[in-house]
Image 1 (tube, rainbow, N blue to C red):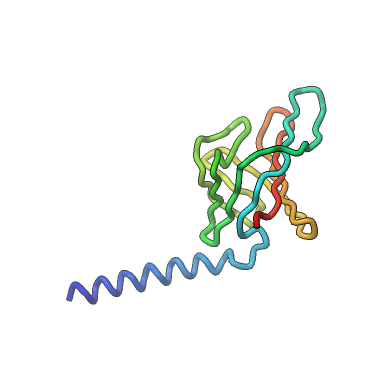
Image 2: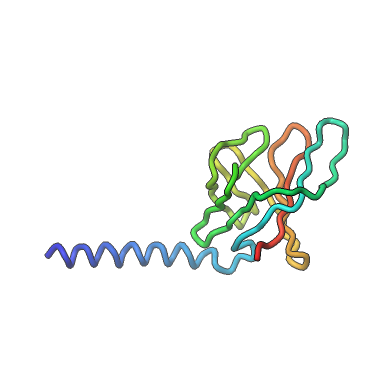
Length: 129
């Protein structure tokens, strides 16, 4: 009897995870991205992205999350978290009240992320290999 309950629970979990996964599989953002540039206006109006030597990565998962090896959401409402909830329909990912929006240039494979900052700030990522 216990074995059949365990099998049922495992099958149910598998079905739930598979249905969640399928929702995100067709999104072009899916996969790993490595930071290549950053922009942080310190109040002088200079809003140019500059190449950076960073090891920050973002991983857009098929389970509706964005995982980073550093803080996933920076800016005025930054959080220490490294995992955010991904909303591909709105081109955002969030941790509590920290919301990051992004755009993807599919031709260049360049992901530009904008954060909530008093002055302009953002990061650019290229698809990781």
